[in-house]
Image 1 (cartoon, rainbow, N blue to C red):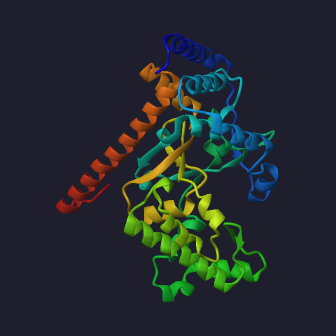
Image 2 (image 1 turned 90 degrees about the vertical axis):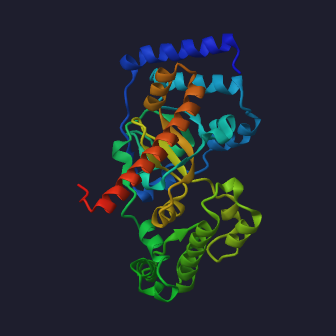
Image 3 (image 1 turned 45 degrees about the vertical axis):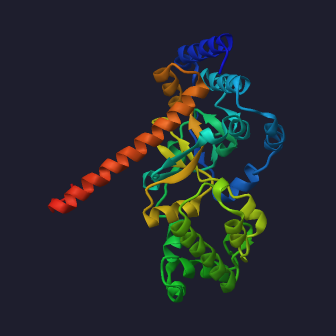
Length: 333
């Protein structure tokens, strides 16, 4: 529970941020960085992120964490920063409140993680709050190489080598440019077959056990996936939740992590999939603060719950509508 004095301070800061945002904010337009530039331009573990990972275990949910989040939100809202709140800090402060469930079919677009703002390259997944223009950094989830590859794991095993995905991986390996997955170069037919075998087993595990949050994956299941030529124990241990970003208008967008799992869930036709909110647009959060009258931290949690509810309920009624259309024989426009 936030003490009255602290709550009043947060509310005052938030109100001031809303009043100033229209006149002082200049929105930065992002463009997705070419693949060959991404690793060199923005390393996955720069010094600032290393420091955040070291300090974040000290953070605990509570008034101090809420105040820090409100301060970061005000900084972005006032236009003093384009982005704020390191993800590691937010994850420790909110813990499971960042987890929710959505219908994987509602994920239509992906936000490119490494973007250019015209001056620098930025890895968006290192932050939690952002006020940039994402439109030019969004790409459709399908068609993609990952979806094509995951389609292949639904083919009979003896027909794998006939699939377009297998032939594509084999051809680039023959040219000396093998694809790299989980740090492994798929340079031989044996490694390519092992790659597809790994994801075929993942598909069977999801069908058998359901789509589980990472924290609920048993050690037995985890160890089974680590015993593979293309999947090390370290890679399995570091696997994160499927991550989403929430756009300015509230659209859930897939961001880093969970490419293959999302494609499998969509192909199977699952109606619910656990995800972790990793990035939110400041405009969306400002709207939640305005609508609820809550502090930024409380408004965030309320907004995540509301978003999950709306996505699942709307999908439920849409499927009832489709079922009725199919039974009546009426064409769907």
